[in-house]
Image 1 (cartoon, rainbow, N blue to C red):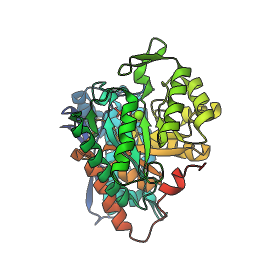
Image 2 (cartoon, rainbow, N blue to C red; image 1 turned 90 degrees about the vertical axis):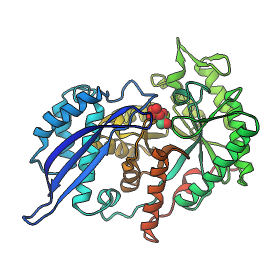
Image 3 (cartoon, rainbow, N blue to C red; image 1 turned 60 degrees about the horizontal axis):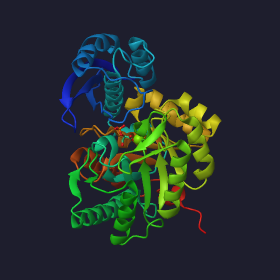
Image 4 (cartoon, helix red, strand yellow; image 1 turned 120 degrees about the vertical axis):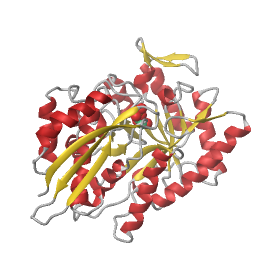
Length: 423
Ligand code: 2PG
Ligand code: MG
């Protein structure tokens, strides 16, 4: 097994122009004549974060700690992901990763995986998959951005599409391009096009949250697709952000809703629009509302826990026991290490939950998340919208991976995952 020669870190810039941590790990393969290899990874950053997430620390401090403590602890160690991640957790020594920082830890953990793949002369997805056959994940792609990613211009954070009828990852992107263009044309016609939000979806000026759903459904039709059959809608309500004094505050709609009222509103939306997935429909602490909504709507649509699970396998098991959600968002920086992210994906499989590997609203050119989804066999991928190069770099990496697989892959899972019962 390869050994770690050096670990170093630097401060680089993310898609919001904020500093973030890049880690670089140099390794030497087994055997005297083995060459050295280098892996790099950059920590992303969320804007709508769950309170249970690994805590990020000041970037200068994180870089300093990697260049000192982490370097001396990992140099000379075997490049075994689980034991590296165990060392990082032990070295940090806190329950929320607040000493070394979630940002330092995720950058080092991922850079080690990239270094291992480079030493094996394989792309990361192949290094992770080994001999297992893989499928391409189904993208959730943002068309309109709101919430914390567009200064609260609309309350719902992500209005996304899932090309449920597409036959491949590459075809999903081609369909998305049509819908994205059609949505832009609709907004321009109404003078409601205000540029793009943090994740590359349009920053819209709608009069109500529901108007955004109607416009998105219209854009799907304008692009020549049948809403529901070809292209479905996925929402991230990010409801933790809406919680004010015991109610859900919808500023655009000038309404304060109880959990029961929000439940009824979402059911109405599911009736009227081709919604196939809703993420964080209730706040992170509102397990009862989440379970009740899952009982009512979970047979028809995907209900995803993001802030609600924070990629923590224990929280997922508790959620399963209460009947809350039927899918989980997997964000490596939410929990800190790759090993813990993988543990959550394994717990999801055991629980019969769906899963989506997700990027963050603050991103970079780092495309590792695409490789994690393919290599681990996670069936869905969410990396934001259809503009801004930190997003497009990831979609384009998926195209390259799909092309490299040729005929040697498992069936594309879109239709299997999202076939809605008819009638
Ligand atoms: C989310 C993510 C991505 P953030 O809530 O799912 O859309 O946002 O990275 O700001 O938490
Ligand atoms: Mg979310």
